[in-house]
Image (cartoon, rainbow, N blue to C red; front, side, top):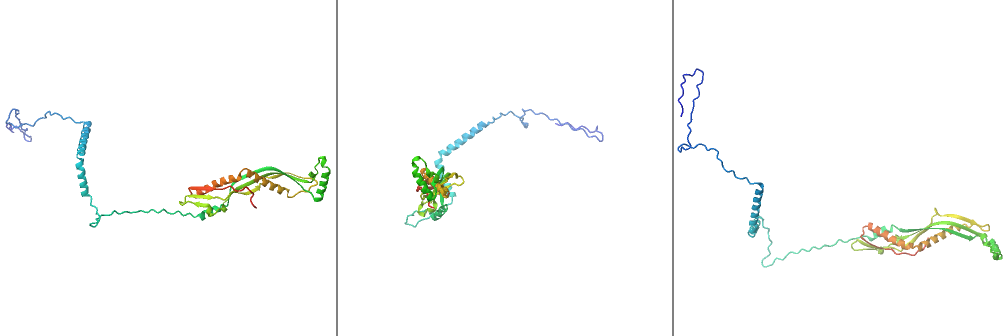
Amino acid sequence: MTEPEQPRGNTRRGELPPPPRITLNRLDDTDDDAPPLLARERDYPIAPTPNSCTVWLMLLVGVAAVAAIIMMNLATILPLIGQLRAQITPALPVATAPAGTAPSPEIITVMITPTPVVIDRGMILRRTQNLSRLVTVKNTYDDRIERAVTSSDATTQNVVNTVDEIIKGFGLDVQELTRDSITMVIYANVEAGVDLAKLTESDLIIDADGKGIRINLPPTEVFSIAVDNKLSYVEQRTTRFLARPKKELESETRQLAENLALKKACELGIMFVAADNAEENVRRLFEFAGFERIDVNAPAGDCIAPTK
């Protein structure tokens, strides 16, 4: 209910009149005919918020339930999946056989022909022969050699022989007066091995796969017997007053030294050592050439001086 507007008589010129006063009558809640006021906030119960453990547990239970349903209906689901896949995948053309004949399977036979291995034995032989003499052992001989010879003319020698018959019973050696003697310190080298130039094609036997080879080497032989002139020297040379110096005495002594060196080397088995070393050296040579299986046969030859 509003109050009557106050008279404006007391209002001066230029002033605004005071605002009107409005009074609202308070309605009781019990008044059923009056419109309801806006409801004030009411106290509603707050729903509990689930924690993370509860959420994960609910998810696991749901997954387990779905998996159980799928397993129980697997027999029904698989045929449906096969039908769906058949509808999606385009059908491939199928070859049909004429009516009345059964389709025969097509059989493909693959023949694998091994590639033949061709090895030029002649080339291998020539390259091996180019090595010529393969020295596999060297033996050194050193010794002191004394050599004395009678060196006088015929007339002088006859006189000495007559005097020697006369004074033989007195224990005197007249022949010593006609001797020319030499003492030498000798160093000699003996070399032995195999002569690869003597190989033939029949001595090389190559396997069918080209990975194996058998080599029959020629017998070992003595290649050289030489006195080392740098180390050898004449230790003493004596020529008696009735003797004449013999020019060939030193060369004969050197020849004797070579013979003794060869004899000593043969006693030490130089030919067998040369054969063993030849087999090992030739085996390594053919390993470098690419062979995997190598059989080398090197017989020991006669221990004789080489022919000059």
